[in-house]
Length: 114
Length: 114
Image 1: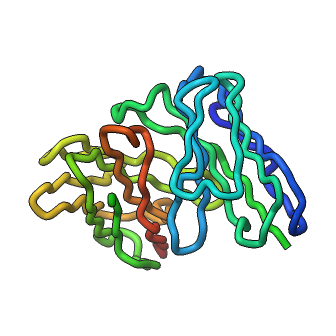
Image 2: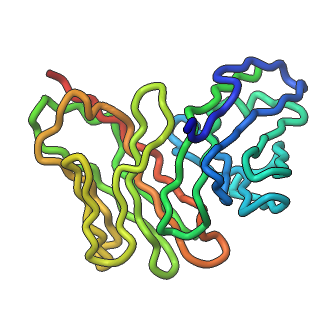
């Protein structure tokens, strides 16, 4: 049981490049989400999904796209990277949106945009 | 809007010292409250939680009590160990449309010296 996996672990992009951060979970969780972690800012929600085919915006969605074609995968796309997107990105999942369920976090992707 | 405020770090303690990390929140309704821990180079892990007023969450010697009257959820441990060195995040989750979405404080870095 791998839990929540994220690839790549590290990535350097030039301004304007595009890329996809991968997130997968093998726990059959319905709810998945993406956060970014910046120094002194805590974690902020980018996008989330309550099930396959359903996504919604979080607190800081601009510059990011998501889709959820399967229960297992929830990729985060940067269409045109900007230096302001330099951050550590965490994917999380839980069985449901209900507050009684723990959210499980992946190990993170450290992205640098030059 | 909903928010979490936790004490600024870093906090440096000697082994076996008493730990308190303050956390206060602002929320509509009655949120659930959480403490997450992030060890160096890893993702976040749930440390403890409380879902209603006066509940006490506890795990690994850490405790926090949900105080509705002071809107607080302070984290305490009676005797810290070097292995407790990590970043600690206070978070809340509310009912309603944003249910399932965590709102985090900025994090408090704890360093424990032998």
